[in-house]
Length: 397
Image (cartoon, one colour):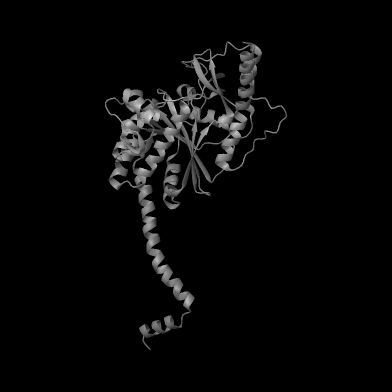
């Protein structure tokens, strides 16, 4: 019997399940090889773009003790009696410095996206983040087990304690004074979560990316369109309605405007998340040429403290685990039941925050569990102190 005849005979005598396995392997192996090649190509593409990125290799957030704290609004609560003001500030300080352990989970990746006014040309590559206002502070939380992405917007006017300056100010003052890494640290202290890194992008590159992708589709209320068309977009007017296509300039104006309704910054952060969501959807259908152009524009205007190794790991996981297909949900922190609006001498608006409750809610949103116990009797919060003061003052008048 020839060798060929022996092989035919052996295959004929082979059990059916083994034959099926061989056929499956014959189909799967080429597919796996192609998939592996795709992952390698993506990783190589990302690694090739590293030279464009401004990496912040200084992990220390220690502030120079002689550095002057810049606070344009300088909220001092001088109108409050000493007992109320001191009580209020002490609650914020104790929570930020001694409020408990931060939560983390190796299957959940938390990256803080920061939007800055400063362009690379204006601020200089080394200082792109410290010069501009940080009106966008959005946590992208990727849960690889539940296959979900949470977009959590932090309110810029949240009043907080900044330990290294021993000062109280709005949240967006953290980056202006201590840089993006210090903003990350401040949010971690307030909300008791661990953030894996930040990525800061200036608004100019944001508009360019949207234009490269052919615009984004968002829902534009009539009152927002009317407000913008009378002001910053009078020469590039937008339409109102559902699924309106906006170019980069229009999308940026739509994301940043806040003096259009009584909700102010609450409505603004909701619009920001809407644009980010629309941008993600548009990017899913981008061509290779568009992806390359977007990468060149975006990465040249990014500053981050995420390591090259981690970026490669994230890029690989995004492909292998299908992050583009994860369910996306949106949250604003602090939530309505954890914040109290207050104006100091009618000169500056702030959100007084019940940080323990807000932190608990944030942990539950991200991790599905919390390490914060709120079952203390007569729990005093910044909200109850300031709210009680305002109620008493109103009653006295």
